[in-house]
Image (cartoon, rainbow, N blue to C red):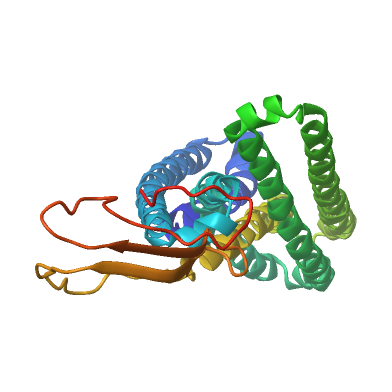
Length: 365
C-alpha cells in the first residue's frame, strides 16, 4: 500500500516537470528528450502502482476469506453447542440472519473497507505535505477547509452509527418473519393465517424501507457537502494561483500539480465516507454476533466422561417437572416407576399420577 500510494503521489510531480521543463524546449524548436524522459518515468510509475495494487488486493482478499471462514465455523459451532432453552427463545430466523446477513456485512468491510481506509489515510497525509511543499501560501489556504471537513465527517459518523444499528435490526426482523412463516407454512395455511402474516411482513418491510431512507438522507447531505467544500476550495486556489502565475510567482506546471494534488486531497473523504458506511453496518452486525457468542449453554458436557455402572432395582420418578422456559413446563407433574428385572426395557412397567383434570393418561415413552 505504501509503494502504491508513493507511485500515485509521484504522478502530479512528473506532470509538473513535463510542463515546466519538457514543453518549453519543444516550443523553442529544441529537443524533446526531457519530455520523453518524463513520459517514460511516468509509465514506469503507473506500472508500479498497478502491480502493487494487484498484489495487495490478492493478499488482502485471501486473508479476508480466511477470517470469514473461521467466523462462519465459529458461529455455526457455537449455535450447535447452545442448549435447547436458548433455541426455544432464539428463533431460527434470527439464527439465519446472524449467519448470512451479518456475516455478509462483515465480508463487505473486509473486502473493500480497510483497503479504502488505508488508501485514504496515506493519500490524505501525503497530499497535505505535498500541497504545503509546492506552495505554502496555497497549501495553508487549502488546509483551512480541513476543519470544516472534519466537523462534517464527525456529524455523519455520529448520526450514521445510530441509523445503521436500526438498519441491522430491521433487516433481521424481515428475515425472521420470512423464515418463520415459511417454516410453519403448513400451519399457516391450515389456520388461514396468510392475510395476518402478510400484514405483519408488510409492516416490517415498510420499517426496513424507512430506516434505509434515513441512511440515504444522511449520504445526501454528507457527500454533496464534501464535494461543495472541495469545489469551492479549488475555485479559490485556481483564482489566486492564476494571479500568481500571471505575476511570475509560480509556474504553470506547479499550479497544475497543485490542482491535481488538491483533487487527490478531497477524494479520500469520499472513500472515508464509504468506509464509514461499511464500518457502521459491519459494527452493528458484530454487535449481534458478539451477543450470540457471549451466550453460554446452561448444560455443558463434562471435560471427562464418567462411565455409568450397571444399575439394578427399581427406578422411580416422583412429581418430576421439566421445562425449557420458566413458568412453562413441558412435563408439569410426572410420577412413574420401573420395578426392574430381566424384562426392563424403555417404557417398561410404569404408572403416572394424573394431576391435571381433563388430560388422558399417556405412557411415558
